[in-house]
Length: 231
Image (cartoon, rainbow, N blue to C red):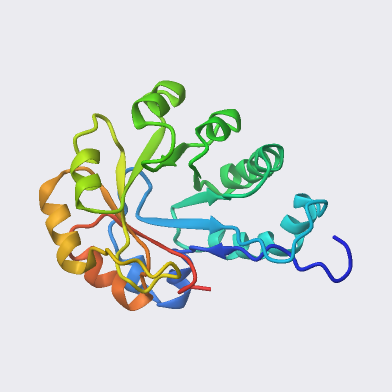
């Protein structure tokens, strides 16, 4: 990129980097069959970034450092989440990352963009209430793809748990300790209720710290997604 231009600073929800950060605490957790024991999210935050800055250059300069930590850790699954990236750039980045994921035998889930997930042959996609409906996503990706759906409140959870064939539910937010200062959050008591209400694997997301992980997993929650608390 050009001199003086700040690179996009990703938040990597590198749950498995936790293996290195917290010793055997997370490593001892059961591994879910879907490979969703830990979910890491690569999140992009654009600051003073010019559009002409090459994504490939940024990947080599910044993203590879984060991926190295993830690939060498206990993270099973990584979610690629770029809200503001141009479609062509997201496609090229995803295609490039898929090669690395295959090499290290990690699961790649694309957030929101079912079309990108299909085009780069990702392992699946994660959709929310404002994205392509789950049933349509399933038609496009097929029954073998991993598809997760977000539930950000009680009403959404009730709707999502009724969907046929959902691989996991992303229950968010765990706490109010998020940058968006979520007014509604589940907490341990809310997660416990959710876990008793469905057999669908649950992934706790939002405001989770390393110190929260063991308490969450004891509730029979299948995995956690973390970002800034690990790196």
